[in-house]
Image (cartoon, rainbow, N blue to C red):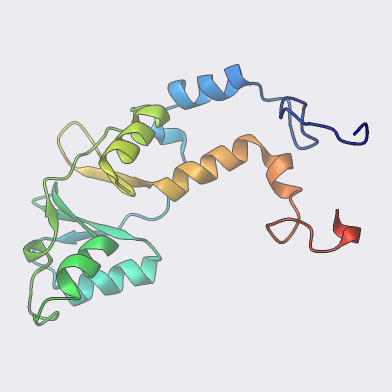
Length: 176
């Protein structure tokens, strides 16, 4: 029985870097969303067709479009809306306006909100995207869960860049 060792998970990992828990906590609670690199923001008028909106999202490689009227945010149209409202409906995608299937009056945040607050909102509400607006309600961007994950990964660049090319456990003795 002397050959067995029980690991308690408290020993430092070879992938740990100099960022301690305090640094990470400070970054998440103190850094504003404006520090998170975000993907392109697609905005469309409320009268745009569903087909044109989906095409714009595909062209920009994003999962949502912000719907505006008179430069103010009035809704968000996401991949979930496509699956839940558009895919099952019998509508003409070229003639139906996106405002008919968007999520109206979405929750928004200012760019000055903390990353922690955005994560909490996304987690509690089940959002993948949160529109960012200025003080007058005009959209200034969108923060996505994947943007925040990218921001977190940049806090630990060596650990992330030194991971093996394939996830998972070693498949051979040589790999372990």
